[in-house]
Length: 268
Ligand SMILES: [Zn+2]
Image (tube, rainbow, N blue to C red; front, side, top):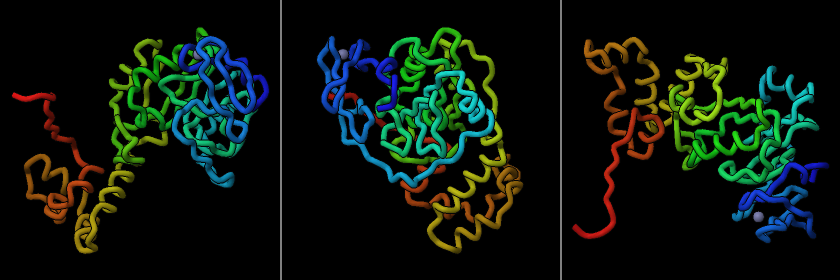
């Protein structure tokens, strides 16, 4: 375990102090116990995957790397993945053990004390959370007064990391999740510009088309043709029927929406 981590940690069940035991952390108040695996405290009940050390995620981007390099702020990095570089003032939080992971746990019940961090980073995490409202409240709790959160999350993105992809949010949805905060700005960062949106969706769409012929038809159509069709000014472009008749499971990756039918338990 990294030095001084115990000063930041708290029992995720009762939020009280944890004590170091033999290869575990123990809550002095509620007696819950949490194993230490590969030198990382684990606050999940299910088995935790250890990811190969050589696996490396993308860099954070210059602005955030600079904050970490300055080292003035104590940062909680949620969903850190396999960071290229480890920073002494950054606590990396994950649900697997990656090369630099400090703590394994659940973002809905952060195992940290109140008012512990100057900053929280959560990049490409929130679309994968079952209850983003709760996770945002947890971030609010562990931030010091005046502390800041920086978030990147999905809006128009295809299904990814299924089944753990729950929400694609509009700006207003993101603001709603973080309604307890003073929101300074909610903008489109360079990595999410409309060009990337088109590329991501187009690539996923073409990947869903199993037959080469249908794939080529859609690949050869133009965005203008699809727009004219949407505006009811033209017939659908080539490939429309291939997409309409795609297997349901494949349509789910890139459809415009869902129809749900559900039933209340019991007999009518
Ligand atoms: Zn406890």
